[in-house]
Image (cartoon, rainbow over all chains, first blue to last red; front, top):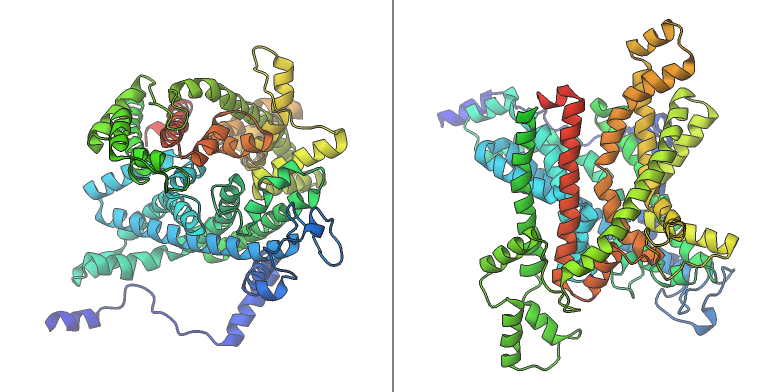
Length: 305
Length: 319
């Protein structure tokens, strides 16, 4: 009982969580962000469009993405089929719209899983230190020795081509760099007085890691998450483009560029141009948004890249 | 310096060993019994007898315990024996001896092209900061980082086909037999491969140059009356290039991995194309060997770069 009263008497080591601000305040913050970071706001709008397209794909798509129509084989872009037809007569526009779902699903999920597991490993490694840290860091070293794309290809080779396996492969590929970056942040946090205070009131390892260390590493985590989302979209497209990612019948942007788009580039250039344009635009916009978010969230990183 | 080199090499060995364990777990343990995979065929319903299975296991060496298999695999690799290809039945080492130089040439060529374009780009961008040339260079570098390399490759092919009526050659001429044809065939793939690297190096050159430009010794050089050209090339650029060379050197692994994509677009019969073909063939020994060759190349290069950087920049080695 005595311990409990001490625990209450001490000031909380992290800033108390403020209540959710009213809608008006959030709105004002968004407007201020748009005014100071116009490029970031542009990126945000494109990202929002991507999300809307992905969610409302069945409404936006003009045709069934998998329906084949022999009259549509290599049809040029026109009023009925906006972006033309592909080598088996499927509507390119509708496939592009449905492809947004795949990109967003693989991108969001793998960035989130990879960064979260990486953060947990990095923070745990920093907190325990000593032998644990040494062993974990050598495994991370070894994982980092593989170029991420090669690691992802090796995992896809072992697991086989499917959307969820792409997510697993990309998540694993993101773990080592996150763990390394967050470990260095967590090492600094571990030396803080509030960690000492937490130890003094008898907080266990789990409580220290989840209640005190992770909240203080979150800014960096969010920055990494935004960077990874763009990388993951390109990586998913790359794997699908190589034919070892999402199965070919599923409409994905990378998969649309595979095979026919290359072979028939002189007959039907729109097959190769539009999906690539979609990937480039989304990643470009996302990088702009990520840069702006990084400046706002973590002033220490301002102007470093 | 010796202590620093020793420390780096001591870190290198466990990393390498751990990497072999990861590759082994991934490509030998997770996919299951390779004999079963081979006999079951593509669809997984081919007929075979238990005796056949046993014979194939003995032949592939998978009847032995995992640690024996791992030990044999690593021991084989130390004298360049990567085992038999599960699909072709030939030694993997023969394939690698043929394909690795092709991939290496493509990577090095991409590195050279990227650097030759990027350094002047970054230099002009820094000297004429905030001018139209600077903005143009920065747009190129931002675009280069955002454009996926396979799309750059497709666009280059489209451009070549529509402007010059060029068709990607199916054959391949080696550098030694026919250097001119070889470079002709490799120039555009290398350009597509090096596009990201170019953008990246240009960015690093620009920021490094801007930093050096404000240093006291640059002002001193200018103050003693040297021509601006000499100040830039002899004093500023020379110092600015150190981080550029090392940072872009660490990107070599990324380039090497990128060949997987570029070789598949341009039909270059290198290691990257072999890797993807092997994934389709479920040829795990081949995949395993290629993954290890790429990883070891990157690890050795990083070691060399670390040591060189420590030698060039004493601040690193005493940390």
